[in-house]
Image (tube, rainbow, N blue to C red; front, side, top):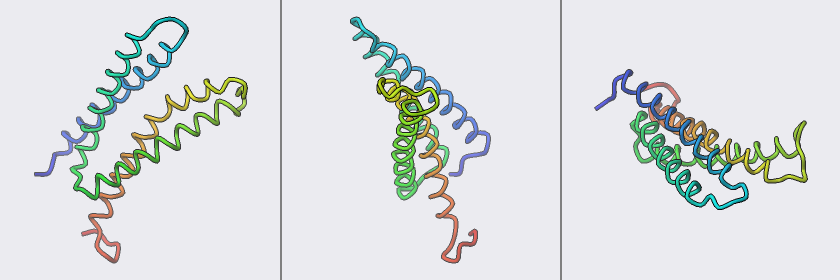
Amino acid sequence: MRLSTPVILLRLITALLLAVLGEFCVFGFLASLEPGNHLPWQIGYSLLGLGFFTGAFWLGFGAFELQRAGWTGAIVGLCLGGFVAFHLGLLLFMVGPRGDVTRPLWGVSYGLLFAPIGAAIGGASGAWIRVRCRNRDARGTEK
């Protein structure tokens, strides 16, 4: 059964909101790494962030109605997007215009903040590419 356009849009908007909440949890987890005993906050932010990102993943990719090949494209895009975004954030804040090479943890923290955004963009792009390829025949024309 094909999903209607409003249902797809609602799923994608909800997934985006869950991803934003997951980003907040990543930032909260990084803030809880300051000196002191913040273990309950670290555990709470980790579990909440994992839950938010899992919900965003299932809602967002569920809107594409993917088959097995589509899921592989989405997962490859997810991994590549996260990897590229992390390293771009790391480089940008370590060697950028205001970068300080003596503080590598700043680059790592910004890389961790950028990684879920890049993963979401890469995963959605990978799913979209696989769905578009599935809807084309051998000559590249739409079915």
